[in-house]
Length: 327
Image 1 (tube, helix red, strand yellow):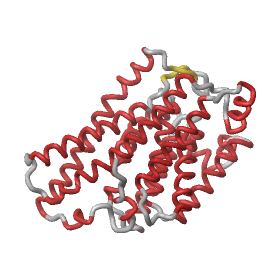
Image 2 (cartoon, one colour; image 1 turned 30 degrees about the vertical axis):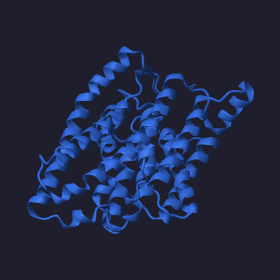
Image 3 (cartoon, one colour; image 1 turned 90 degrees about the vertical axis):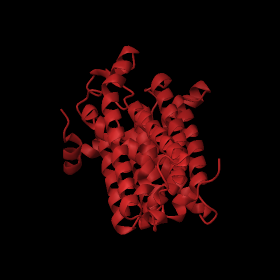
Image 4 (cartoon, one colour; image 1 turned 45 degrees about the vertical axis):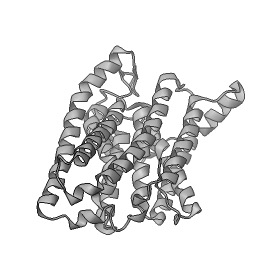
């Protein structure tokens, strides 16, 4: 697969320069296409929720939550399905455009680039999802933290599923960073982005021990990145296009998750973290990336020595935010 240069070269100017010149009918058709895409994803996700929940329950994919109630786990599969639905929509639009059925629209000339970048991210996200899904199926919930996985390896002389997931995440993250990079990106910056992507993937998993906590962190952080990127860095909205299906899925799952009717599972929380990390490395300057690494590094240290939940409960605002909406 060819390397994708568009994201890094367009961080401040926007992904597609041609899109800025769209006028009249062309801009209207692009807007209609975007709205149609959002409607399709939202309707499909809404339809999937009860079917995925029944599927998980019928196949025994249930487990106790923090209160001991047995609920379906692995609802994060909805996020992955929406990613591939988005890819299907883009593939269909590209075929229609290439066949001439959509007419000669200058704005559609960038469709193939948009589809290629979405495909790269979707492929990487699929491997992250599968690693998390495998951990949900066969991983031990008793082995936690870096010390726990290291102790398990020393005692059993075999890798825990958590360690396998960490190695797999390292490989996929390295591939994605190299794929979206270019020859002008310094090696040290790519190293920061790799660390950020790995830690962020696990951070949302660390937070997913209480209803709604992981989704609140993802949606809130994504909105902050979107606002900062659009209003301060003058980014093109389409830079965030690959992350839209996960955001829509997160919004749909929030009500289910926060009321304790279903769990994201490692598959869902790891996919949320990977998507958020991708958004950070794609849009924010390296200084902000370094700050992000420091913050999530602190959260990992806190999880090792104490508990993130304990830290949240000791802060009034964080405790209120954590309990907001929870039944």
